[in-house]
Structures are given as C-alpha cells and as structure tokens.
Amino acid sequence: MSENNTGLKKMMIILSKATLDSVYAAFVLANGARMEGYEAEMFFTFFGLEAVHKKKMNDLRFATVGNPAMPFPTMIGGLPGMEAMATKMMKKEMAKLDLPEVPEFLEILSASGVRLWACKLAADMFKYKKEDLYEEIEAIITVGDFYARGSEPGTQMLFI
Amino acid sequence: MEKTIAGKTINVNEEGFMTDFGQWTKEVGEELAKENEIELTPRHWEVLTYIQDQVKKEVGLTIRGIGKSGIVDIKEFYALFPKAPLKTATKIAGVPKPASCI
Image (cartoon, rainbow over all chains, first blue to last red; front, side, top):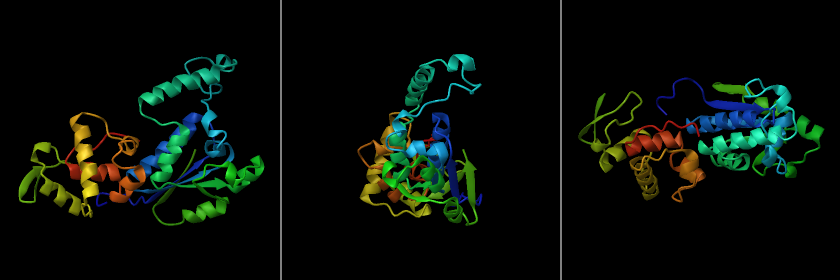
C-alpha cells in the first residue's frame, strides 16, 4: 500500500510461553501485522508449543503467581483453584472485546495468511510429533530454518 | 483535505479515508478501488455493502466479525483485498477506518 513507507515488510514472532497473556499478545501482534498488510510468521518454541498442541491449547491459563499486576498477592495466587478462577474471569472480559479463544484465534491467523512453524528442539524435548500439533503448523523446523525465513530487508523479529 | 475523484469533490483525511459518507457514490468507490489496485467484482460489492450496513448499524468492524458475517470468510476477504483488507475495504466503502486490533 502506498502509505506503507516504513520499510517494514514482515513480522516474525517467536512465542516461548504458554500463559494466556503471552499467547494472546503474540497472536494479536501476528494478526495485527496481517491486518496492516505486512507478512507474518510465528515460531512456537518451548512452552509456546502448548498453544498449538491439539490437546493442550484449550486449557491454557493466566499466571497468578509471579505476576505483580494481578489484583491480589502472589501467595493468594498460589492457592488451589486461583489460576482457574482468574482465567475464567479474564476470559469473560476478553469475550466482551470479541477476542476469540485459542483454537479459533489460530484458525483466524492461518486464514489470514500467518505462517506457523514449530521448533524442532522443543518438539524433541517434549516428544511432540507433527500430528500432535494444530494442523496448520506447516512443519517442525530448526532455529536456523526460521532465521533463514527472515533474512530479507524489512523483517523484524519479536521474542515473547 | 479535498480531493476530486470520479468528477466529484470529496473530503478525505490524511490517510485517504472519506470523512463524509454523504459524498460517497458507487463511482467514487470504483475510483478509490482503482487507487488501491483493486478491480471490483460482484463479490467485492457484497462485502462493501455489508461493511456499509454494519457501519450504519454502528457495529464495530473486526476481521473476526467479517469472518462470521456469512458474506465472506477470512481467507476470501484477504484474497479480495490482499493488502490490509479491513483498511482497504473500509476506505473503498467510504466509511471510517475501524479502530480495531483484531
């Protein structure tokens, strides 16, 4: 587009965590890039793989421990059931903003042309195979493969 | 900012979005599409009409909402308006740029 004169062409977003705030941040950034006409790719590594694991993506939670922004002390956050409760409350707020749940968000991302990759080292470590992962994950690749995809001018990488 | 297009004078903001929908006509839409390198087909028009209806109803526009509209799915929306579909489609439709992150 003519007003796109910032030189930015592609956003590459690495997700290494499975807490919902990190997952949503990564998804919104990837989706936002496509919405603005930039290319976008995502690399799921370490716990970030849980966000694309078929059996786990539905059960991601917000961290209530070690998160000073939570409206209660960390010790309370550690009590049984607190994570589930906080997650339920946050999900209600997000639904009001029309934010989809993780599986639907992944569908939106792939339909929007975001290319999705899983990290080989992390997949080996957790013993995840390609068939365990969301079907739009194109392949399990090495960090070198991912860097090679971002070698063109105008590429920015983000680690979350 | 004033701009002459399809024989009409229209007011646009610095990003090229029309500021007065009353000045929009189909011909203006067609010219705006050409400026954005899009040749409008009947499918494009279905989407543009839907967008204008939503704006009239004061419903916020999002990619997700467009995907659930029953008019077009997200993949086709990106195929019809390849670069920044929501921005481009709203610009052609003569409605304000959606203030949406999703």
